[in-house]
Amino acid sequence: MPQKILDILPPQPELSKLKKGKIKNGDKNGDKRGDKKGKKRSSFLRKIVLVIALFFGLIVLISSRAQSEITFQPIRDSLNIIEELKISPQVEDIDFGNKIIPAEFFEVEKEAWQEFISTGESSREEKAQGVIRVYNSHNPPTPMTLKPETRFLSSDGSKYFYSPERIYIPAAKIENNKIAPSFIDVQVKAMEAGEDYNIGPSKFSLPGLVGTVYYYTIYGESSSPMTGGFKEQIKTVTEENIENAKNSLNESLLKQAQDSLKESLTKDFVLLPSAVFDKELESFCLQKAGTETPQFICQGKIKIKCLAFKESSLKEISKKFVLSQISPLEKLIEELLSFEYLQDKADLEKEEITLKFKISAQTYKEIDEETFKLQIKRKTQREIEDIVFNNFPEIEKIKIKFWPFWIRRTSNNLDRIKIKLDLGG
Image (cartoon, rainbow, N blue to C red):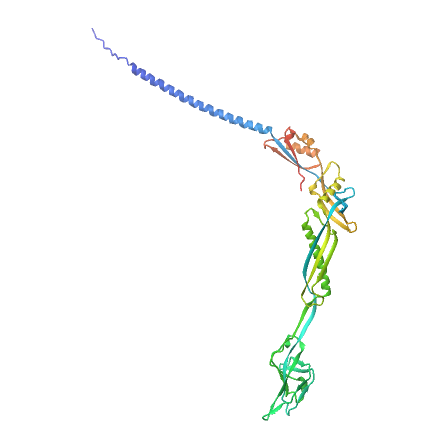
């Protein structure tokens, strides 16, 4: 009987379990990693949605607070008025009915001196003087008498001198059979004035003796130079110089006093040319007419009493003058109000000044902001410009700003529409 061969493997439960366990554990870890990735992706998407929601929420919030700013420049009208009023210390407040503004008296003293140029001219000259020793060597010895004004000619033949006195020259002496000349020292003057006659030591002849035997025996010599000769033009003070100098000094003193007074007053005060009501003036010159000097000095002192008024008072009454001539719908631009003083005259007895002046003013027509806002609410820039052009001819220029920048219309809320007035310069 044939035999059966059977391969019988024993059961291996542990190995089967182990393999099954490994497979199961591997599946579980894979599932966990997939869950984590899904959760991260979901969280990121939620954040993006939240940011977008916040962004649009912020836009909606800002847009709900949108504002617009409308700046307009009105058409301006010019107005010129000529007015006349009184400036008086007798009133304390502005009197519009009588056209009087208040003023105050102020006093100031000033002293000064000034140097002036002499314009007169005079000649000043002097003749040179010196001593000539006159010799007498005539033979036979003979005394000689020379009359006054006897002339002496220098050896170069160009300079004449003379003696104002009579000259007596003793006779010469004979010593050892030789002539010993006698001599006498004579004071002489040049015939003409000038520095040219200040010559050095020289020999002299006597022209008056030409043609006589004495010409060669009567002569002169000087041992020292002639001095003191000069001729010049010098400046002198004239009566006209003194008169002009006093007038100039007086004008300068008055200006200095007024300037000093202006500096001591506040900037609001005004001093007109006719504001000086009392003036005490003294002036004199230290040199008299005819004094030889290129310059001379004059001194002076002044005391003045002036009437000054406040420019703010003039501006206040000028505003009333302008407002009295414009309609209630017109407004005055006070910053552009200006004056031009045309004429002022002081009344010394009444102690007041009459001032004629020109007022230059700028006005514009006022716009009702509430009405304007009602017409431009929920309007675009182009629509607002059309409304202004058609309904508000009193507006010259307009500038529109929206906030935030993406807003293109004004708000329906009138409080969020701001109106600004640009009066220009």
